[in-house]
Length: 87
Length: 183
Image 1 (cartoon, rainbow over the protein chains, first blue to last red):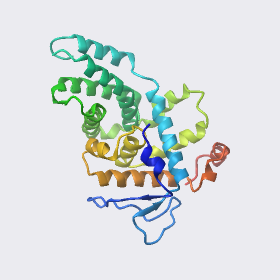
Image 2 (tube, rainbow over the protein chains, first blue to last red):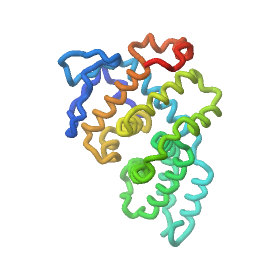
Image 3 (spheres, rainbow over the protein chains, first blue to last red):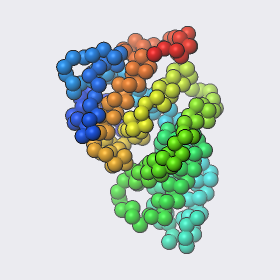
């Protein structure tokens, strides 16, 4: 799926905008070590990010692969055919 | 009103991903399917408010998320049947390699705050742009970016991923040996 931006990302992730509700990024790396004063930088290796993304998609795609459940397909077919109110 | 077949096809094409999102939100396949069905009924009842040519997936995801959020508030006490039903579906996929690692990942994902998990899934799995994800969640783009970042960092932390070496073929074995009791 479209992960062009992820593929382009380098060794570090830059958070461009501090969230208005104070959701500042942790200034720690993946192992909980502080990474100093560069607060807008979260050290996550490209390989780590890629791997997390891969597992996430693998999990998600297992469901996607199941396609449209029969009862949903039937529901949509009925809705497409009927002229008056829904359900 | 008769449903335009083109619109119906767009809806149909979105259902598998919508369902995956629903499962990731509710952690329960039955509730997820109910959510999807209710989302479709609601969407089609208000199909006039959908502007042809705009993003159908984002529109449906927004409806589903809002439904889930209102339901979640009502049924806060009985959330997260995450382990049982979801795990059951995975057992029917014997081709899945690295099962232990996979389970470990799913468990870690469920430990994330809901806002972070949702943002990560929309961007990292559903394939939405940060802008679309922000629209779906009704928040600022910067907030989504921050949540996705925190989610990734937290996941890496939970999974004790420090370098690419941790992804060697023996990772699943080590997870078994560690008995899942690692911090």
